[in-house]
Length: 330
Ligand SMILES: [Zn+2]
Ligand SMILES: [Zn+2]
Image (tube, helix red, strand yellow):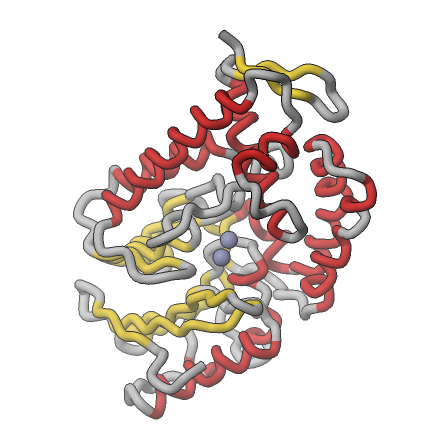
């Protein structure tokens, strides 16, 4: 992390919000946030737990104390909040808990991923392999999967989740909890006054990656679009602070743009299925530059989330079960 990478935002209630970017993975920056309000302070997300990510988080905490003059340190933290159980957000929880005894809050659906991410990833291997076979991926490529999960299976477990979150909760009298599945089953956005910590539900530039319900329950495009509605119905949001990329100045416009983008992709997929196609074949057409792992897995998940959405609505019909081919209905 470079000096000065920490950014400050002001909450409407006088809270100071600091964004600490961390190098979660090679080429991927994730944002963690520290919210300070009087004696109360909360850390939102922890980075990946990889060495560079931990070093950036440590440097960010030190910068708040040294540069911003905040009376903050690991031992002063009141709360740790995990927005969702993906490794770039919760993988560093074991590192943080070795330094802070603050109670951890996370949504109930993501407790296994948050409390023991390495075990969670290990448990995901078999369902993910089954998903890849269903999509039409060759056995040789399915066999490479463990290598891409391997790094995440070595970290320290996050430990106990003391506060189990559900939609509609008001955490610590401050953060309104909004459940936003689709990207991750237990993802939450947190509303603090007119600021929305939007995790990976809304990103400023890219379409958040979707997880198909076929791979993990509670996810998929249907729940994602419903969660866009849910956030869009929140009145008076001034600023979105996401898990990656830049702050979002107009949360409502961004939610609408994401919806439009998904709906136009649905048309593309229907058009690709004039002849019966596997999910892999559709992905090759729509994402021709994402045909190697790990990008291939992301592309397949994105296509599968839309294919299952169209199938549920009778707009695509499957042929076969083990590796179905989908054809557009009239
Ligand atoms: Zn995520
Ligand atoms: Zn993320």
